[in-house]
Length: 149
Length: 105
Image (cartoon, rainbow over all chains, first blue to last red; front, top):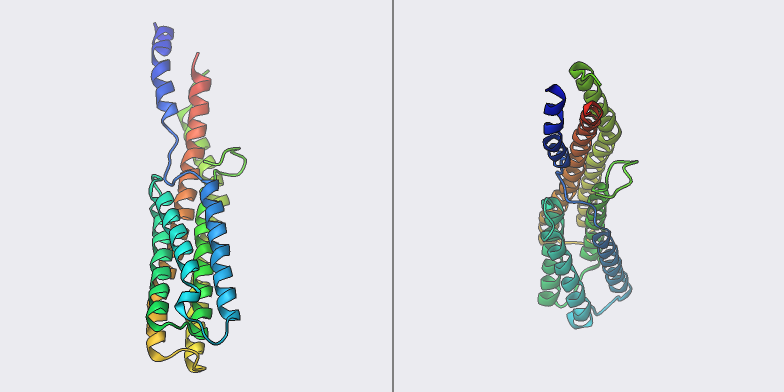
């Protein structure tokens, strides 16, 4: 009787165990990491060129790069938004996009970008990309798990 | 195989503690780093203003932007913290799974 009860319970226990892994954050996504790295590099390139470009820093000279980077940032935000349990990475992407658009609009309005602002803003954005990368890395499975989820 | 609930709970707790002990320092370090980054960023803004590299309006804008940067840092810390808890729970659940599987005929 006892033995047959055990066998009867086995499928139930199996079902319980299949569903017992707790997930609190989205699984690690290498494509997101690569996209973030690439975007951080583009922003670095933008500010290196900007700070090299002493004198006239009219908006039109940088308009193409602004559009390109904004498009990529929107893509990164969308990529993060479609992943479940990913609100923190969405916040980081939203904040990066908000600042990028703010800096672009100010440059367009002033038709100039001050050295003082450029240095602070480059450092800030680089720091935030670092946070985005670290957040993605943190989503990897525990050491020795063999998985990335 | 006999099912020893006390031993099982002890094993689950041990697994959770080990996992937590490995991950928690990383989350704590991340928080310390975000706070240190913020301190340095505020210092940079103050210096830029004192040196005349930015004006008063720029400084206000830079300070406002720091809120978003700090929020991004804290979001990263939150991921690390959640992952620490997730790993600890799953380590305990793995012990439970092993014990149940061993007890099955």
